[in-house]
Image (cartoon, rainbow, N blue to C red; front, side, top):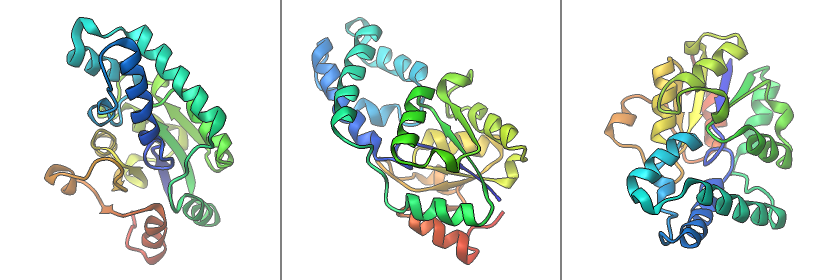
Length: 218
């Protein structure tokens, strides 16, 4: 079995931290609290997110200033706080490891951020491969990141479960041919997504139970 994990909002409760970061950054660059932009860009890499910001704010938006102020907030936050781990992560990872499952991360975040969060949470060694938003051409919902993760795992997409919380992530996994599984965070699935996913679970421990019981099988 092969399982590919999204990171933000799936393994770690970082989307809510980003809401705070973009509230802070929005006020700093003069567009007002902009944490709501997290929901508009869920699952996207930085480049794709910036296009959405440009559409929202036009000439009032300065990409470099946003990047600078966001990093400023996040650095201070993570200097003072550990990365918030989602319920059930350690239980699921231990179960999959004992089951000889091959695991990868497919995150739209940049590599440095992914490595930092995985290391800080003590879970880096569970993952054989990591694919990040700055390593692929097209952001989620395009299939690129999942196709790359499958390639690195040496597995066909239909042999890989993809654990996601966002619409863009689930569409990316589905379009790549993976088996999408949803654990909602800031966004609840619409009818389109409910037709595509193999299951929807409240937390990662429920995902573990589903694998264990055979409720999720390739």
